[in-house]
Image 1 (cartoon, helix red, strand yellow):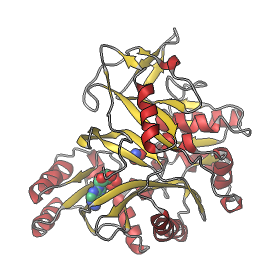
Image 2 (cartoon, protein in one colour):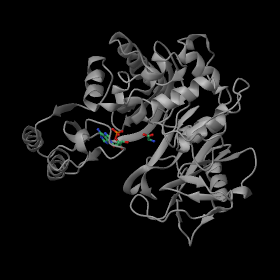
Image 3 (cartoon, helix red, strand yellow):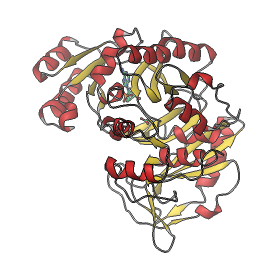
Image 4 (tube, helix red, strand yellow):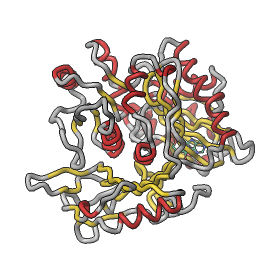
Length: 422
Ligand code: AMP
Ligand code: GLY
């Protein structure tokens, strides 16, 4: 059973359904691209766990919010198999203050920072930093809206007012981290963890900005690819030795063993060329999951099951196709502000072939079997190719076949076109 309803969850279920060990994949509550959708609200742990017991499910959780709410703890108390971190281990993402202090305590490289719960002290600090470039981060989960990269101290003061006085992010913004702004290139580094050891996935990166050339507002992600040349062998080794392994052993020695997908948002500093952690997430990335699942040759289920039982050390390294994968997100025109809904999506049946896959996010199916738009980000069109550029060309030729409404779709044109700095 996959819990969640986005493109990440569709891609996880698609990959798991290929395992000989998996009979059926249920989705709670899925979307228009997934079958066997269960009509249970994912926050209703009691009904979910009953379903899991009745149908002998192994459960995989997508969204961080449910992890923070303790879905894994609930299932474990009921003795039901589940893959994901406990509520306490989820603090690596659900509290930026915890996460930054944890990194410092374990010598994990990250930007210098201070934490504040008093807005006046925070503003004083910002003013005293003079011209230093700063980033303001809400402590709690904020659905991707909690980080503001500031160009000036004025900017930072306005951000503090908005988070701590005007409560733009509710409780999440009552405490903040203020950190130095770093410059460099970014990548996503994700591993499957069993509390003691880890198995790294291939490297990937996502595109957060709405417009070509990384302009415009932040979004849930407008595209992604894997692997990224930024993570060469040397950087990969450093990420494992200086970041991922210390994180796993640090969490374990704090009595919060980390079982689940551990995702480090990495920046390779433009001066030192060293990898630094921008943030930890406690789940798979969306849309990084889509190209990763497209490239994975090994049986994902075996890894998740062994990880949930603490036996990841018995597994061989994960095998990946040497081909690259690119995922282009098709969104409703107007996203992330206002956009139309319930448009019929045309062209989906024209997408065929072993080297392409379309993962749904904001879609639903009507009684007639039509797939309708139902949100901001609608589809992730993925393609494999001998390199990122060719995978991108292939993905865009498939994107061109899909339409809805009166020219109501939007996508970036430059996903995977260049693997130079974003
Ligand atoms: P986070 O959610 O912490 O990864 O932040 C979201 C985005 O904000 C990152 O992908 C970066 O682009 C940017 N960011 C976060 N922290 C910093 C930093 N210290 N310096 C520069 N950019 C940052
Ligand atoms: N792709 C960024 C995230 O999943 O948080």
